Length: 104
Image 1 (cartoon, rainbow, N blue to C red):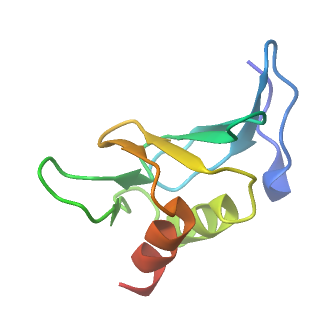
Image 2: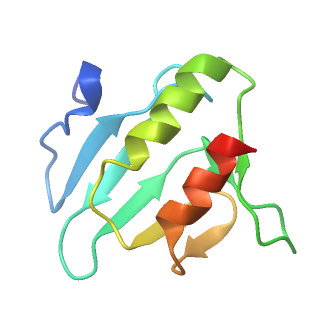
């Protein structure tokens, strides 16, 4: 595995995805970014959507400050689909959904 990179810069990966170091809900978590049509972000446990609910929820059990920074970093990435480890796919304005978690 590539070493984590500070500053949210994607690390080159084999295939068509890049990895962005996004700690907070864990110490070694990465978000995967697939640029193409459509651009997709595969988000680790930073954000979840509980079953039967529409809103995203922040996961801050490990380090709340790092989690908030990493969630904010997601907004800088190019994507129109957000795939969550827990909660399925967010296709309707995923960046607005992420912003709402930062203000909640």
